[in-house]
Image (cartoon, rainbow, N blue to C red; front, side):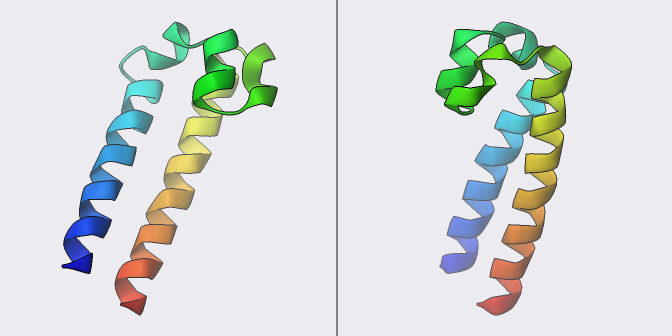
Length: 72
């Protein structure tokens, strides 16, 4: 059952990062909304910085979920 939860969380997080990277999400949240959806220090980030954050975070989430799957 834990595998299903890990998989579902990873799918939801991946959809969020895919939206930020490819589907125009970074342009939409640029400004104060980035501070709400990412962190408070990201309010001054431009689109490319938000995309870079999303790419690095997606890689980190992938590693985290693989480690969780291997450990359980």
